[in-house]
Image (cartoon, rainbow, N blue to C red; front, side, top):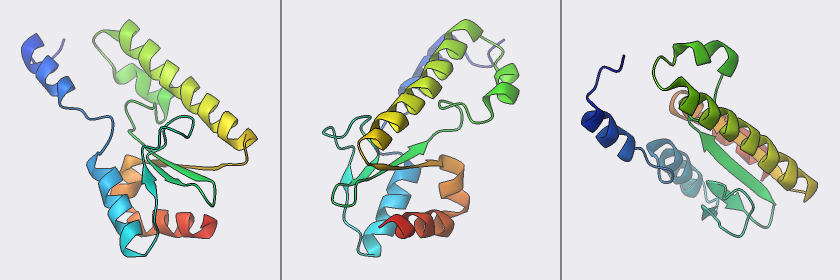
Length: 134
């Protein structure tokens, strides 16, 4: 059973952004301060990565743990309501992420994916990984 009324749940879901999340902005600003120049949500690159470095062919994605299925096999049991919808949605997101990774790799792009909590808790480590590829 959902803790919220349908109206409150709808309001909460509408507030979730697909681009410009706090973690994306935090990582982007940290990279900018270090002198790295990038494009945000570049539509010209398949999968519309959160950050792209076209000259180096590096695509960076910052994925939400829930919507992109971190530890999906263990976490899927936590979903209590509207399971069919969420299972299909999250499993499709996981497969789409794999398709995007494969396509970009075939076209000589380096794909870096970070979980949003990694950016929150280990920003320096994320930046070090990105720096190795730039």
